[in-house]
Amino acid sequence: MDSITQIWKKIQSPDTDPSALKALVEEVKQAAMVSESPAKVNFGTSGWRGEIGSEFTLRNLQVVAAAILKMYREATPELWESLGIKDFTELQSRGLVIGHDNRLLGHEFCQIVAALFEKAGVKIYYGGEMATPEFSAAVEMLNAACSINMTPSHNPSHYNGIKFNPADGGPAGPEITNIITKNANEMMESHVFEPLSEVNWEIIDPVKIYAEFLHRQGTINFAEIQKLIASGKLTLVCDHVHGSTRGRPAALLGNPECLVSLRTEDDALFGGVAPEPSSKNLEGVRNVLDNSQSAFRVGCIFDPDGDRVRFYDGSREIDMNSFGAIAFHYMVAYRKEVGVVAKSVATSNFVNIIAEKMGCSIKETSVGFKNFRPYLARDAKERALIAFEESDGISGLNNTLEKDAQFGLLLALEIVAVTGKNLGEYLDALYAEFGRLYPTRSGFEVDKSLVGAPLVAKVNAIAKLGEPGMKIMVGDKEKEVKDLLTLDGVKIIFTDDSWMLIRPSGTEPKVRIYTECRAPEEKDAMFESAKALFFKE
Figure 1 (cartoon, helix red, strand yellow):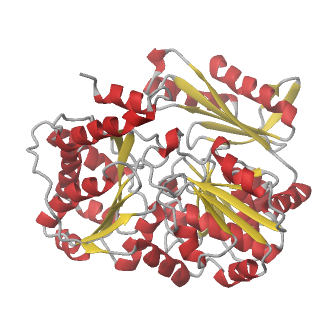
Figure 2 (tube, rainbow, N blue to C red):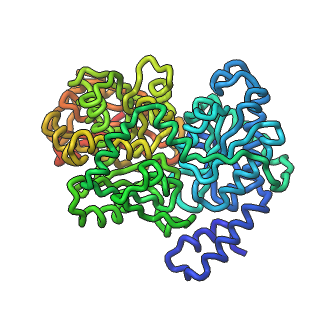
Figure 3 (cartoon, rainbow, N blue to C red):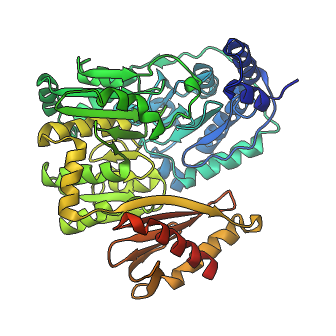
């Protein structure tokens, strides 16, 4: 008999007869419903992810639910502060928001978790298929204590996942997730499975709640967007890749005639593609906009849970490295907002150049959207006008503490509406004023013995070779170091604004290298120089 992993390989193989897919999928679903095999849980800031049917099962999800409840029951004063409530009674009264993306058994996975919370006296709000930012909005609008989101984000179809957010609606920090991980793994072997049962939950409309949240917060200028739509000069294309954002742009914008929606059908297998906002997956958007005669063209692709977005404007792809810079410049130059820009250390420094010349502060953080919380929080002393990371995540002023692809799309439409420029035209204007940087991302493998702490130590030791004022050879040029950041790996910034970041993988024998330079022909030399620093140390 084939293992679940082998069955998934058959499901995802292009050689499998399509007529056999339904039976194979049913095998996976049945295994997920009845299997009592334990799994190792690693509940990081993006939640726990596992293979559906072998790791991610009803039984193992019930263990995770029990682990979260145990955390609440045993919370210390310091943990209550992180959770955003004062005691277990407040959890019960304020309640849990729960929902799922479009993957297999989303409803059943929610049901098994919610039943345990209901048994503990916790009020349950169920939103069905929900996008990630809608959880954060619902927690805030309903004054809920927390949310649980069944999604592995942009991972392939054989994965599912569970994300936990505390009372501020943002991603849980390690002080929370470490406890959930510990509890779950301690309870995993001995847990006695309680069969699936009905839950008396309150059904909510997540799209309506999210729209009310956006209008209340006032960051998006819907009036300007509606003027653009009414002009008849816009073609808007949104590719949902069968995910939970389907129907959202239509609902938020009043179902405009200019909107073309792609891949909105039910398909938990995503048509066999990797469901991420990649250049390859933008082909459908390109096909529509390349043939459009409209003066204004906005295209985007979302990931399945709606926390990542990438753009296309009929002439070029606009990734988050570029769009984040556009969005920040717009907030300062056109909206006249006052605040900072927050970005992860691996994200383009193009926005740094813009912010410095505009007299604004830059807050550079370790990789992980949770690190933007101090700048996105409602009581933040230094408010982020835009917070973004190179892996296509964005949020901003008064918006969710989670990545929000829908916010990104709405802001893009507002930018086009107010400036009268397509995104590529805006980007060209920024290049003309501030110059251009060319980013690359690569890496290399190292000996397996270095995985973990030894690799982290070896990478961190590079810092002594890149202190400010030192000279480093890049190709045939000698560059002077302007600044050094050791937030997450080692980032060396040169006086010409080019930079290199060397980061260790936490789980694999790999070193990841990010570089950015002023001239495209310098890309290879930057990579080789960064690699040489690793082996020189």
